[in-house]
Length: 126
Image (cartoon, rainbow, N blue to C red; front, top):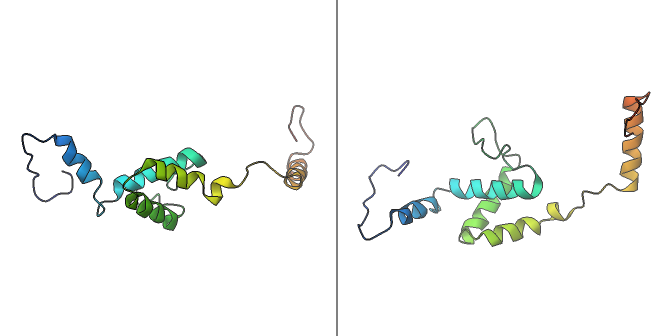
């Protein structure tokens, strides 16, 4: 297995994929859990806590590392239960906040649009 110092012995009667799953789910190796949490978060919010979700370089840190770590700990404690993860993301305050603009926000946005794009070109949405 990757990053293991000793080769893994496989019993002939055991499916080798079981060993891979055991290795992926080891609590001391949370990389699998982090990638799943990040992808589910990106599904709900159109942007992962690490974005793009497949760029895990040191030059692309998480926007909210504490949130990512907390979700990973919960996901591992829930025994990698995807239902728990979806439930947690969908019931978060962040997800519950409406993306619809209030009348005041639309008014301010319209004023800003007029200020930035005056004179308004034909076909503009301002």
